[in-house]
Image (cartoon, rainbow, N blue to C red; front, side, top):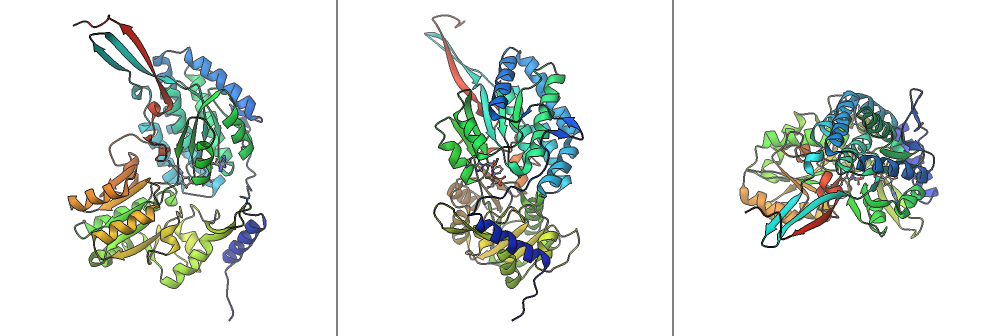
Length: 485
Ligand code: NAD
């Protein structure tokens, strides 16, 4: 039987073979210069991780000497520069990582600038009584070591910086190697803003070439008092094994349930809006749908009317063979299906081309009907491919959705007007974020109430991190005084 493979398919297979020959080690092909932008040297970027930590330590000492008001001025300057340069970072991020899209990345930077809490998030607690007054204050840790992902690179650097600086910390980053130019641009932006507002020249620092070794230096350095990690399961496990206080923001696989009380047409639009946002890169984005069988056709119609393209079972299986590749663990020799880095964050149009389907830019998302076992349901793809599984009733929907979430306890969504169904699913799935009747991004303050973050710490329990997550509580007791009543 002759197989007519497209060039893209052949490239995928070659990449998969190279990966397995490398024993599964990630091939970092990024040749971007992470030390300068348009000939301007980036501030706070060091060849040696130890030098980066020294610089962030000096920055921390400088900010310790500043008043809260001065600190807030630094944060306002970061917000302003982030708004001004949002599209620069969005363009840089898309060009460097080849993932996501510029308008959505620009919107994400605006969201970070507008809705990441500053010093107002740091609130002291007071207890008075017969024995006087006890004050509990949220103090900085010192220098925070932060590991950031490729999916929201500059967004995470700036969001972390605002929160960590508001809490009074210095920060050193070990960014994702495939997004190092974009991440270091954001480090430089924070330092430029800080200096312009009267702060130190370098408050946050990074390295030219982050590796697992530079991460280890960070883990072991005595000046690093808190580790914050945003990424997949491997890196979260590694920081949690570091022996230091760590905040872990890990992987998700957010399921969506649509029952037969939902506004089905709105649900179809909301789900496609959320799923296709930045080509599905946000960890909170809709990844698989469980739809009541009696409304599934209407839901699919609404999705098709809102930028979805439906593929059949044969096309879905062929696409699965391209977007998921076999990677062998060099230690155990076990071969595991892993998302192809060459497909993560790509547009629906590019992904459809890989199976020989040509569509226009109006197509935002690929949908298909699958069974529960299908790899599209089971894997966190981070690309705009949305499997839809028909279910009989709420029991089956909840059972399958909870299983598909794999115990990450990250994010889940539901479209329903039945309060009992909504409550039952929210209780069963136990996720950090649960969005009802809205696109997923409402969960991080985009069209929904509440602050934003790009570090959602499910495993370690901080939830949607903010300045207070990066503090340590200190108590001061004044005995038998200061109670004025
Ligand atoms: P990734 O796991 O590939 O990399 C994250 C970072 O960890 C990178 O800087 C990488 O170089 C580093 N790293 C990887 N293994 C390491 C190790 N053993 N020791 C030290 N550093 C290590 O992440 P990615 O592909 O860029 O991001 C996608 C993943 O991150 C998805 O699983 C997504 O759900 C998750 N994510 C979670 C959140 C959240 O807030 N919970 C936010 C964004 C992304």
